[in-house]
Image (tube, each protein chain N blue to C red):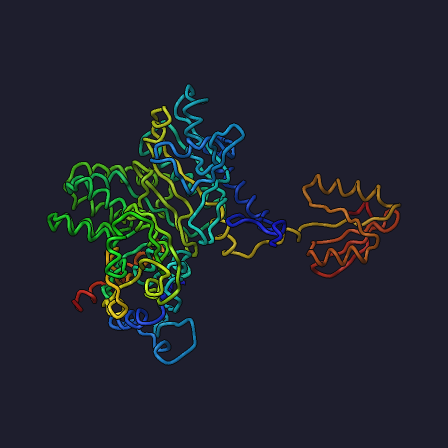
Length: 414
Length: 213
């Protein structure tokens, strides 16, 4: 029989030692950035009523959710999406608070992917939501915070791709596609099926000009010049307006001095159905999917009873961590630690000295070994920085393990 | 670092793909001989290739260890990975179909529970769900046509190319599920991060295919 005490279920992971330390460090740096832009930390329950996570979606079956029945027979689910939990808070406890509201979170969410794809079911996301403002300035602020958070976490080479779902919708209605074709288009987009999309568009019998423009858009991504050149080719005023809006965002991002990371992405295949205005994703080399996903979702809060526009993003901490570990080897967290070894007689002085070091911010580990030889052996094995041996009275031996040297000194000289 | 990595489905598909790439100037001499190597680099050093089992190609592309994959639409549908399907390469044309003895047509339309043998359980499940028919799916790993002949299943879901194998075993196509052919898939992030190189490559392949037509 399988010994279940020795295994973890599919989709979860332990973080140990240096990796756990690095993850915490990245998370703290990101949280600090959120804080400096005045986003307020929010913590919501790990599980809540299923309805919060399924509101607005058809049917009762949601195979991607970790749901369970509680003692009262109510259906609850592990948090699948922090945005929805925040939407609930905005529509209840905070419904009378002034607008705009800024929220920041660092939380684990739970979702079932397809089976055996080796993907995490429990994953950490850091994110913000800006509620109550629909403007280019709000969108630009959120994108700026995302970029600063990635930089603070130690990521240097990445690009931020901005697109507009509003633009896509206007273009499609401008084409005069019927509802059935529109559904087929959205389905193909969701499945990332450009081949299918192309065949739907080609069979819709539109005029050649519009069609070739749309097919060109599927494979477009580029800097601001691209946006401007597309804008010139487009005749539909609403679509033009959506592009002008993106231009406005870009101007603010220039003022924020982060425009070099920005790409406009009209590969309409990448749109999520969740969003209503802009959407953006950040990518980096070596990671196979987006490390940041965000956008404007002006209709979600309305479903919760509070008609407010909102924009936000989530950073995939697990992917970010993976990338940062690719950039440089994991730092040994032990190399800066010092082990103190003492005898019965020197214990009092040793503990006092150690506390003095800790107050200065050093990491000091107490040794429980009987002899200095055992302590040194252990210190070398776990790669500590040094050992202080309080030998006798005020005589201390200082071992520098990296240099493999030892010097004698006294407590007062330490 | 700026190399583009291809994952190719071993066999006919890989050979055909390499010959198209050769025509647009991407030559990989070390792949042409009889070799046991798994990873190859193009003569100009800009591209890497590896051969894998077809059903693993979408997996490699999903994780981004390969930027581009060349694989049949059947595998893409069955594996259901998060990848971009960008190009229909137009070769390896066949179809996914429901097949069985001609007498099974009636059973298929009756709404009674069907036993289906297939190498493609995911495609079969989705198809019968969509058409609202209850089925019991039996996963086989090869020679699926045996299923109905020896009485393991009522019908099969499989790739049909010429229909010859079916015919020789007394089976016919009962329903069409989807047209199939070789496709080019791209990793979500590669399409963004290596956008220009990949776009350029895809355009070249597409125009070459246009010439062939």
